[in-house]
Amino acid sequence: MMITGRIVTGRGKAAGFTQLDWVRRQAIALAGIDPYPGTVNIQITDDSSLASWAALRAVPSSVLTPPSAAFCSARCIPVRIDGLAAAAIVPDVPGYAMDTIEVIASVHVREALALADGHAVSLEPWTAKRVRACIFDVDGTILDSVNAYYELAKRAAQPFGYAVTLDHVRHALSTGTNFWANVVPADAPERDAQMKGMMRAAREIWIPVLREHARTFPGLVATLEALQSQGIALGIMTNASPQVIEHLEEAGVAHFFQAIVTNADVKNRKPDPEGIVRCLEMLGVPAREAAYVGDTPLDIDASNAAGVHAFGVLTGAADSATLTRAKAHRLLTNLDTLPAQLVGPA
Image (cartoon, rainbow, N blue to C red; front, side):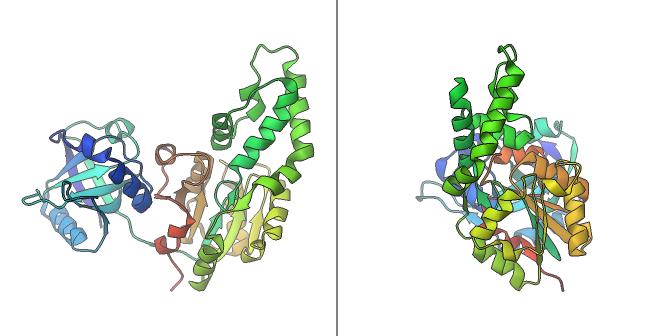
């Protein structure tokens, strides 16, 4: 189903609604979307799209439920607008126009897609994807390790007199850039030697820090069991070293995965799709019948390049706006919601 229409200017009242605390919390929980203020409005101009929109509204969907009668409830229907993860919002108010669709997203849609009034757009309703395999990133996706990296960086940088912030860590994990290059000023004396010293210190303490501070996310086992019960094969593709897999073995979850690819198995790290392609080959599943789940733009870029369904999860380094700009097909608050978005092989 595809719904087409044209961009129109709304009444300017949606910005306040989308920034209400209860709306933001529920939009994140239901669709992984922390709404950018306001909505983008689409006027349907053809009978086929009107019929499709009516059919979509007839399907049960999630509801934004207000804390009091002072506000109206609204249905929240996940969609993609010209490839961006979004949600159609249908307020429960009398006389609401059924030929106009209000859409929320984590980004300013008009700016992201260079849209103006009158421009044509398409809405693709989200449906659960039929897959034979689901591949996972590790750090920030199945392993709650962002704080472990933060602790590692602080300990390694402290003897050199540098302060490390959580933003430094999130940026490096999201972009794949050299972490220490972001910490040490470009004009610092003996910069290269300092960075090498911090990298050496980090390697020496990484395993004990990982064991002390990293944990698999709550509910992970239930999610993996639910996917397996649907006949979906599971794999891992991570830019991390094989040592992180040892941590998953100690946590008792490594046995769920039929194929594991780490940075030791590839020449090109994410965002290159090499690792995902290799994992698919090990599982014997074509890209169109697989999904990949990760927490950074690197994961989404690699997924899109490999041709798999790209899921962005909000438990790691990147926020929903960053993952939306990277063109995640669907955003997840956490992995608990993943099984409902996938359907196993027929």
